[in-house]
Length: 73
Image (cartoon, rainbow, N blue to C red; front, side):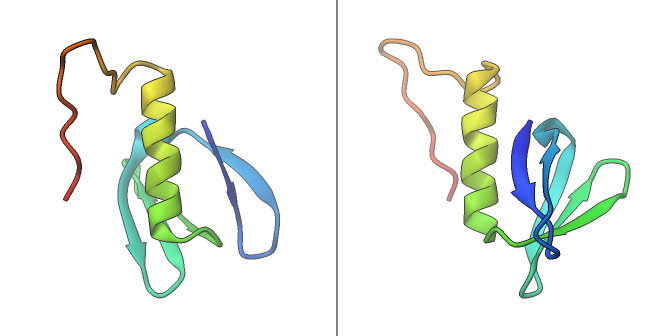
């Protein structure tokens, strides 16, 4: 789970495994795989950073000794 902030200031947790699309309109809008949308205060890159940390914490993205990490372009 990642913690995000709604535009009204309310903090909530979101399961990052269900995030399908992140867009800036300019507000950051997150679309889940089920079609639900959330508009949050955090910038798009911050959401991506939180997702990456979450994925690493649950070993979806892991770094082994001697392995290379591919960066998102």
